[in-house]
Image 1 (cartoon, rainbow, N blue to C red):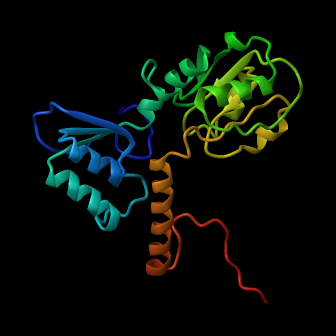
Image 2: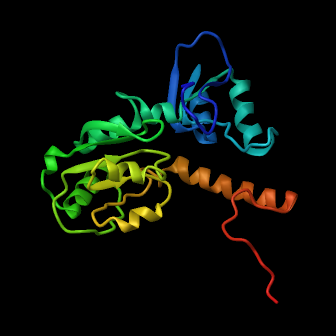
Length: 239
């Protein structure tokens, strides 16, 4: 984990009891997941998205106090692994996504080797529409498809997180499609043979709760400090 330039600390984030026998895991250290860990009498909670992120001002108030309080009250250890879990060669999100979609990895790219590329033998010479339908069937979620040049898909690239800066590397790898998040890189729109999918599982309960929490944090920041944490547009006064 120490080799990754990540957005928060990886490993043990909250120390609990020393003896660990029962473990609960989930995507995000949400209040609901922590409450489930308490109900399960867990000794440790393992998540992809922990509690501490770059940009936090260090104050333990509101939602953070509530979640930390529950963990500490019940002596539950919290372990978080963000980019290391995306990158793990066997158990990582990219490895498991490729396995689920029937992709055969041939290489990796990006400054932290987070991007994967390979072949899709089950969809040899398939169209991008066939690939999009295959992804929807396997993940049971809609796919956003940006049509490009017609033709067969022979090489694909995928990345489960932080991939918005890797489009040039994916193009250099000669891939026909690329899926990543969270933003559309302008160079992507210039490439004729591209498929776009949204952030996988972005409609999960945990993600929606995180979105609601971010919206609330923006309101608190605006009314207490005069500015939002993640402003969308600069407000100007009409003259």
